Image 1 (spheres, one colour):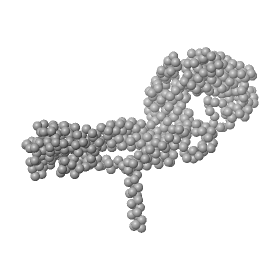
Image 2: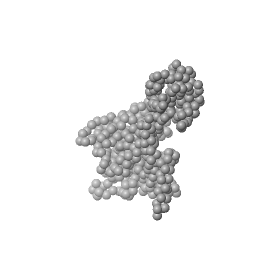
Image 3: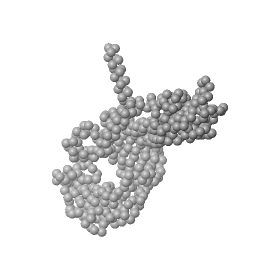
Image 4: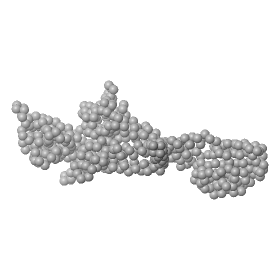
Length: 523
């Protein structure tokens, strides 16, 4: 049993040394980057579940296999979490001993001068005879150059050891600790953060309040529940877009009414200038148009629908649908005619092009708008219980013949009215603006920001720091000097020559300053 215990301990120590080596940390960092690729290429269930369902329906062979391997939930998968955790442990185990060693090196005085200066990469005879006060003068010269110095005297011989350049190792440690803080900040934001997307139509009286049911798409962190979301409501009062003559947008400005903590305030929302609410940031992503349609059924009932159309190009040519499921109901019998639900599939052009055969807008602003509509009559599919998109008609109903085209296509101006074959009418009243919002809370952002700044500072220090040592020996035989670079420093020979000349300005030129090479230690 004792043999088994010692074997287990030896294997554990060997495994720990391998895990906490810098080589292993680099391999794990590379593996983390490779593991994140599927999360960028494939749709993710916590961001866009509809796209995941579409992908699975389209790729019936590979889709289920990828789903079982958590490729549609990469950042929450066990294998990604394992790599992330191993990288974190590896960095901690690698950096803590280095940090302790670096602190110890900063506290210790510079080491004793080696016995033979001529074995150092740079050495020189400064003076053939020493004078009183030489040791203090040389020490002051080194101190002015920000060298850490130590003076030792033994048998009438004074030795000065000087060291400089710990910024390199300090920067290196700061860089790696900053990388560690980045990993922690991302993980902390993933655990305690949340985000969601919402399309908000102008004029809706606080149609959006911050609850999960009101989001088009949302994702909560592992430690966040629905009751943890901050309470606020938003209303779009006005939206203004400015464009160049070629249709390129110049500015988007949205006037938002915010209700939070019992107070109501008006805020201006712009691109790259989010609203910073208590517990959430609201960013403007895009905008479009929502045509307003009035449908009058054969019993004279008027129904109004405001349907957001989604842009299909940069000139805001938009497509969408408007549905009227509760029409053509007999007011006396309360019964609806069989297959009498109405839906319209349409294309909205903010500015109709000169060529009528081109179904694309000529400008993103509403200079001469047109709405092309195709009516469909039948069963819209809302009663089936299956989830349906609000931007397209149910293709399954069309394929089954339960929903069919009804009448010829219509092109309407604002205020125009079209008549269907059964005598019912549809009126294009006009449009409302809509904006798409990204609402998120990421408590790891300050940590990531601080880590990024520290990472750049550490990298700068690591690249610019040059660690080196300089030694002087003052005795009856005169003054000699030696120098040792502890890192790659091509300019050390010139610096050593300048230090020698400054320390003994009346002395002769140093006998020899050898070409500098990187040497770890000379004793």
